[in-house]
Length: 429
Length: 105
Image 1 (cartoon, helix red, strand yellow):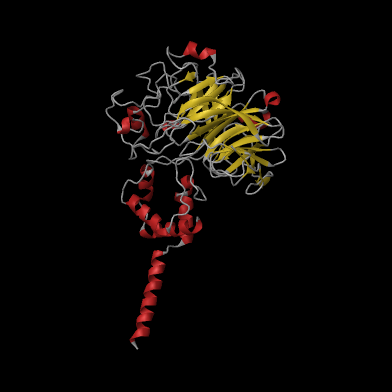
Image 2 (cartoon, rainbow over the protein chains, first blue to last red):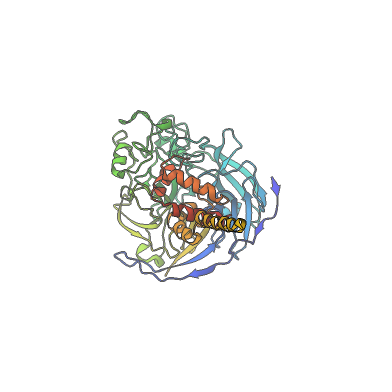
């Protein structure tokens, strides 16, 4: 552990610099808000997630740099750096980035005012082979330094070796979002399948799951009552492909996840305890034969464009024939995959007709005739949250980007991290 | 009196070759913004699974794009790069290579 400088003042627009204020009338049927935006931080490296204190203090992660905090006055303290980073208060030589993996999600302890504690999800070489871990960290009083690192989950699978698949490099399908439920107070941790077909339906590994744990990493006792016998008790739901977003309904606390599809069918799922999301890319299953490197996730044709509907028939995101009780998506992006990433509920009268709606973000990926689709959509849930009544594309005032994260700030504004290197604040008017 | 003539011819050829190999960076910038920036980023630093392009020389970029255009599989993102490169002309490739190699050191 190296002790170095902790304040980053260069290369970052530390103040809130208003670069555009564009009153835009959205095109939903009712009365959506006009939007303006502020660039909160720029010149970042692959920003991945944010978490806010009530005073506006913003913790944020950069995939290959680590954890930092932006204070309400605009100063930035670099707190916990990955190996080979400079200018962080502390660097951890075991933390590393590769492909989609690195330092991903960040969450603030619900009792932060008492315990100064936060959590991050990061790839680590402390184990062999490397894994993803959930780290618990304690902040000092002026938020310039972390200490008392405790790894509360140590064995979330990380993809070590490249494989013969699209995006088949190490670090693929890495999950990484972490959020506390405002209802049960547990920490929910989303993970991915690593291009490993055994993970989704297995009960003894933590890949392709949503975990529900307490602040020491112990399982929520209710998990084991809901999951199949023999499952790791930290598992809340299973059978996922690559979950990168989770948000809780502001009234019901129902957890919703966003699940990135294989060139078809990005999903929004309403989770139920013990639920199976129905992803099973194992070879010689459901009418499929052998597959490249024992993973059928991109079959029947992993390198050429083809009709997404045909793909879905052959390798469904939610296989309700094999798993009749699987959780069916409340929305499927019209059968397309465009890199769904994060989710956050909009709350407050300032959002007008969008108050209570679910914002979801897309990284954008154009393949086989599917438009790239970098955007933020606003979903109007219906049928007690089990379906979607209306979808409105947010006229993003900052323009399109690879939107990696969505987080609602303490004042109710929507913050988004664009992987190009900025964090934006979107304000309704 | 042959030497000056030969020198002049050699110089003209060299200039001609240089301008043929070095693409139009301005055209490359436009094409990069349209076709490349969404994945490799506006500063070519790479994002998620998409690699950084910074620091690659012109020859390397031309070579890679020609391989993808020919349908050759090079690395895990070939499924995306092959269709993206399929319709690039020689001039497009030269323009992109010039822009990327000079703009993103």
